[in-house]
Length: 489
Image 1 (spheres, rainbow, N blue to C red):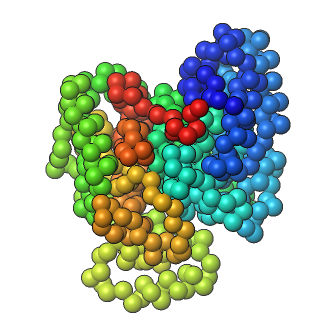
Image 2: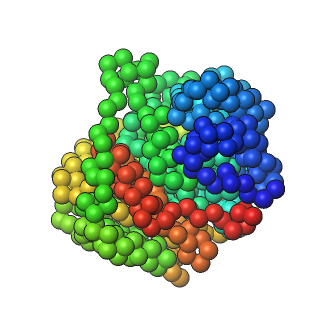
């Protein structure tokens, strides 16, 4: 089954084709399902298939099209991350002891994409507890990168990024606390948007067995993934806005427009180095090329600013708060071991490994102190965005690496241009936007030795349309997604 004209099409193109009767929603669903059946034995992105209901949804979409209805995602095939509750389908988060849990109700985001007319093909693979940049578990196995099957597709939304790169539908939903939207987008050459914190309600994006109550968990967000920047904005508009059973009682969403509509009007601060971790040559080279192209297009590109918050301080606070959050789910014996190790730390040890260990056993008093430091950093970002419209920086230091499932993760290493570094230290770049809750759009910039490279565009608080628009303008001017050769026949 060679690629059809629709396999890698954007939502805009698919919607036009549907409304002009060039193709039916049923045919689009069949096309995507056919690609999954042909290729996913190697990729293993779609871990839960829901093809019968998808085809029925597609038939319903065709009937709505015939009546002239036009909801924003009508007839568009898509996938969703396994961690979202979809009524009638398992939600495991990779936990073997939860392999038989079946959700009774849709997550709110799933309700919204269904109401917008989307056709959900199935759920995509994740790492255990959504806690890795590789996507594997004992229930569903390992997801591979469509550009090189030996390498990671990223995580924890790695199944979603691989599905998009392989042509399994035009959109996907993911989540992000440690780069889990942006990292897989980077490794698979697609687009993702980490929204401003709490912009998209996460009810039903819930560990199996826990009640899907309205809650915005610290640092964590849900967000859209796609093969084009404009499609990101379209899906964001569908899932954003307060939960009607919670904040929606009093609040309504009114996002401001992008600050500019022309590329030449943007003021960009470009960062290519982090004080806590080097940037690999492949990623640095892509940033340099982008910087040169932006300057030629009239963008004001600045390389440094005293307004930039201290990145080392940001990283240390982020490590503490992230691990404090994650440790709430640790088994008692694991937590007790961390307590013993933390008690033995030298007070002068400010390594990132030490900060993570301190974070695991953080007291509420110390969490409040860390939160105050975060508030100060957030104020500095607010001041910076009075002089700049966006900050462009890496997502990760290197392209996708060969999969390494050695446990614990703290013992893994990452090679950056021949030098070995702690695997978990790669959190430094995702944390720049995560700690202050800022919106960040991951975009592809092409290939380096056959593997995708890209950047993230960090924008001002609740001005999500600004990094999304800049991403769209860069895509339009310099190109975007490139299909992986082995899945583009």
